[in-house]
Image (cartoon, rainbow, N blue to C red; front, side, top):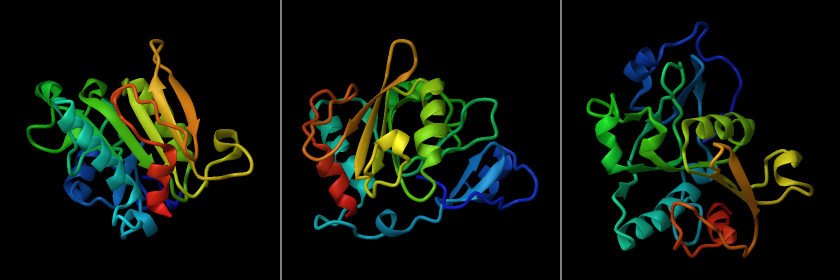
Length: 216
């Protein structure tokens, strides 16, 4: 989920521990480099946004959950989760995340709070683009790759991203990022009835339009 404002909410840097204590259960806030941001979800993030009664992130979660069950993957989609890169004052709150149950035993914080710190625990993450698209296309694109998250989707159902990322004219776009052996994301820019080729869910039968139309 993207940030709606660039302004500081707190005048001084906030530690991750203080962030968890004050805002850990509040899906409205995210911490980036010690700065607290109000996500202020609006529109399809918080209301029924399609004829099927699903928002974009929930729709992605529903399709992937079906794959998890059908393929008998030992994965799950948590109701709430923060991503905290180790030794950083950051707590990303992704719109949708898939975790590997087998890897949770190695997570130092999971037994006491829904926080993951290791990319090996995360199989998939998705962000739904809103006003501050830069974080999804740039900051999180880099940080999620550094963590080694195998697959990252950027669902830009309004076509808000910069022309460098989605081209011109701007239009609804699904960016599917697959981690290469070199640890870099290779991007697929998808629209309309173009099929999604997923590395984590290879049997997924889904088009970009099916994902993006849930927000329109």
